[in-house]
Length: 344
Image (cartoon, rainbow, N blue to C red; front, side, top):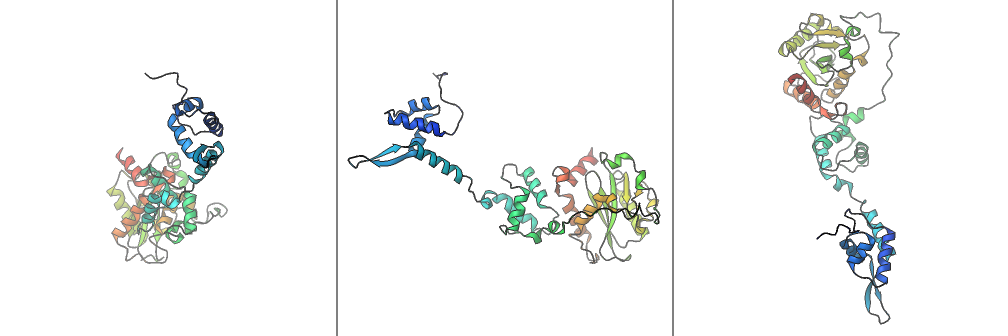
């Protein structure tokens, strides 16, 4: 029968220095029963057995016979030493799974992930494994403790302070808007609550109109990216290939906001989607698209022709961006959220 009045704690607690003093006093008075001592101290008798074994020191009596004696001070010192040592772990071993996956990811050819995004992704898909913080990972990289270096982190090397946006005394009144101004966009576009409103631009390798370029379209709510390789960036080419993309996915596009460049002069002819234009010299008005264009630059450097870049290469680079686990999306991917929207 269980004794419901037992004073032994059912919840595990570490012994205090006072309790260790109690144990020594009872042993010194001749009480050796672990059960009796446990009831007095308020813990399980197995705890008392382990404590006495750890805190006992070999002594010699007057006849030089060895015997063990429990000392509360010795047991407390031993306890504190164990507590200190339990934190002296090897971080590379403790986070071994994380660092192995991190190295594999950042050595990949097609990847646009940042350290913070990888930490968030790891937390989400590997919740049962220990994961260091973002600053800790950067510190280990800077200290040379990992097999990746800053050269493997193109986004870190590109980081710089944001420059202030200069309005040039307004929005460059000497340059005419091509069509509907960004100021005419409905409020649902501004707050991003309604999906399928896009921002667009061109990413150019060599800045000549007869050179191939990329038309980039970024969905404002999910950050999903559509990238179309175009043979040149004449206005008629841009309009024709965008219309082809809209006709292929008519349910995807409610509006697109472009900059005021001459290559978009024919976009007012687009059917099935409302087109707006940002103010001249105001790229921050399409900041979502500008950010994605910066990510694409890892795969398409400025000054290098895109003639040798295949459709498959362009798609791989696009997938690398759409498969990023982003902090701004609560560490979901753009593709994951976009598919949810278009399927609902």
